Image (cartoon, rainbow, N blue to C red; front, side):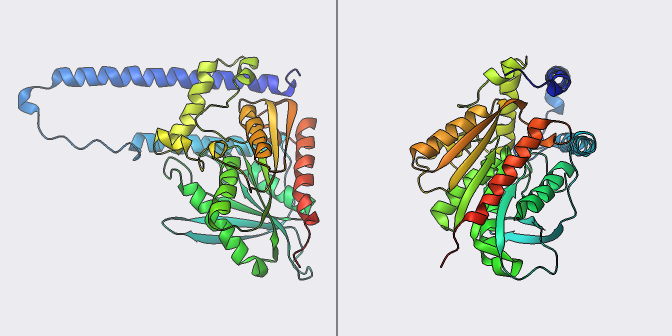
Length: 369
């Protein structure tokens, strides 16, 4: 199906951005190389002395940290503008915030969106533990489009949305995010009664990088704690960080050179993973797990013009092959970030309605006992 006209101008801007990023990176490499050549030429045996140790690969330099902070500020400003111009604000939903300790890793903030009024009758409602997207390195609970989506989904599905503000890479690399997710799940189960949540009706959900974390959490839960996760909802998921299932036909159809797309995807993996070999760890690439048997029912949403459509389709197929009830839906004519544009795009509104319907299915899970 042709790309929706809404995305045409946005695509031109994105192509300029990707090409600009590559040009800037090339200029930095040339500049750094020239400086090294000049420095080497200026050195003599008399001024050669002990040198300061080179920073470790996973310790970012001050310039890198400053550049990353600028990028995140720009991303937050962009997100604020997106909600204002093409998104849909969220309703006034009651929220509470909690800090969950994580053994051996940084504690993680959790925000609960509870659609019930304060004077609601006692009793637990279903809850979804959710993880935002952002290539593991940007995003968060306070991004306006993320907060608005959580509010709308909680209110319209009548479920509690328990959003996890996992740590960002590269300051905190894998498996920090998986350990935080697992700790949040255990905490939610242990405190469900006090929170007004039915611990027998829990689901996990995520978008893009967040969907990778959600899928990995189902594996960690299966192998460690066996808590009752009833469903998993994965939107445009990253399922294989080796890049083995990326579908570059999608980016070529958008006029984005494959070399640029591959570099961007490799950059995501390098930022998130301490070592290249970690991409084969099932908690980093759930699609590569030896077995997916025993995982919760899965719903996978993908977009036609998204190279990650290959990850989503392959993951759903593996789940089915291993005996898990899994369905996959591809939305035609749209891109990876389609869900943001509910204010202007019919396909985004359909995506939202389908997500709400999926979340509400937890109400149909039979009560234990």
